Length: 331
Image (tube, rainbow, N blue to C red; front, side, top):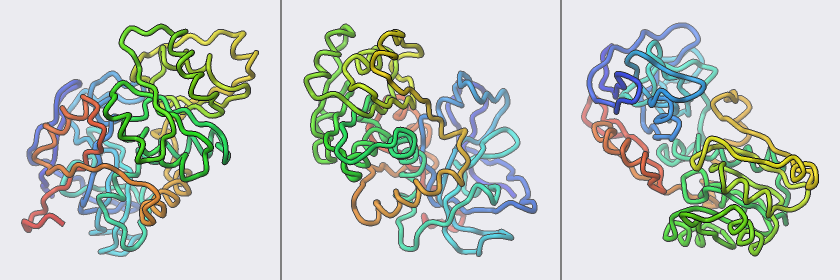
């Protein structure tokens, strides 16, 4: 079956829109009509050819997650709306297409009445905030939470999750002053703007003024991470989820032992969907109740290359691709 899809033809190339042949569905797989497919930093990283866990030398359809309507399946009822994770590769087309074939084990039903675009938008980003904060770090009510990289999609959700789960204080750190100031409506208690040529010691002193963090969610690494561990509380739990500031950071052994810090890494790509289910259930419920919000920009499939460039510039919003289906209706 031929469908309209985006294709990355070589490492580092932008996606191009065209027609591709969709593999036939096999036993244990489900054919979905794609309603909404979020664009994630992970998608750009894999396509760049520099990602540590995946590199594709030949053409493939990107897209790591979606919400879709079940079209053919042995496990799920046709017409039901589900969330799916996609292992995009040259032999397994991803979610940036009109339709996609997904393993049954990589699918979860979404709650009745949930907006498919919002439900998709909160998936990867919400899990990358919720699981490190609540499950890995074990954030408790009343604790101070520091979020390094608070203005991106994951950071914005982390602010809201920490606030909704009873954090005593939520501190957001980032480079964009206007975006940081916008976090006030999401529950942040203090913001720290990163300076262009700031030293570790100067930033650490400014962070200390906002309160010693019990939990740090780090999407930056590098110098901001080094400053945060200087300023954090004793026995702080730190979870790294990204490295947009630098690939390396220095953590003195005396500081690690003296403060008795716990440092962990989290990678959603290596976490099975069944382990993400409790986080997604909480996120979808919180979304339906208005406890969390995702700033979404809907993008037609044909405009994915433009959104791809926008994502590379840290848009402070979530691009969600909404394919137009063959009958001409955007569902």
